[in-house]
Amino acid sequence: MSNTDFALAIEDLTVSFDGFKAIDALTLYIDKNELRVIIGPNGAGKTTLLDLICGKTKAAGGSIKFKNIELTRMAEFQRVRMGIGRKFQTPSIYENLSVFQNLEVSYPKGRSVMGALMFKCGGEVKARVQVVAEDIFLTDKLDTEAGLLSHGQKQWLEIGMLLMQDPELLLLDEPIAGMSARERELTADLLQRISKNRSVIVIEHDMDFVAQIAHKVTVMHQGKILAEGSMEKVQNDPKVIDVYLGH
Image (cartoon, rainbow, N blue to C red; front, side, top):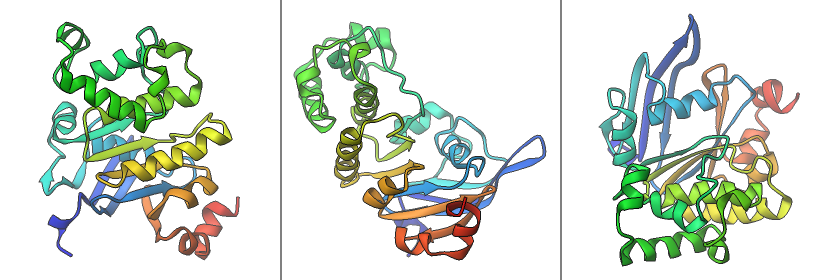
């Protein structure tokens, strides 16, 4: 398979903080429409990897190609425009706006909040809001102020705000943190659905959840890839048991 066939091709990626290699000559390939889960102990470099892909952190060396276009010199906003969406650990939603307004302001036409509020909500946007609201189980909450949602619903809303932009690559950092058992089940369903027409990278600690959703699991340790494959393969890998699952 040539590199052009991958949604994301990362090669020899390196970044150091104060002489410490947080990411150390890492190579990773993500297929189109793949749901990849990245696991590993704290400090393995998982969040830093997402920071490098979305442009929050600049790489010291190596290559990140998205749809075969080099990203390493590209600004964060340019990567968003290319179709990369990133959700951080804590939900960042507009608490005092309704669910509908949160989704509406996320539509790419109005990039700034002011611009989006001034911009007349056309039929196209309304239709997109309806589709996304259904995707994220919030159809009956469109008029609800976002601050009143449960923690899990806020997480879904934030995923919805990214889906409004129809990204081709979605990066999610611990999307089920603080969710109820039922919300976790629904989120597994949500992630499987949205990876049908885009690539999704999820960082997660909950192994039962990982087993439910992952097409493929990557285990990181000390800024490198320790193992990769199906959940079953990774779980039975002696190196992985030693550094991670054994603790």
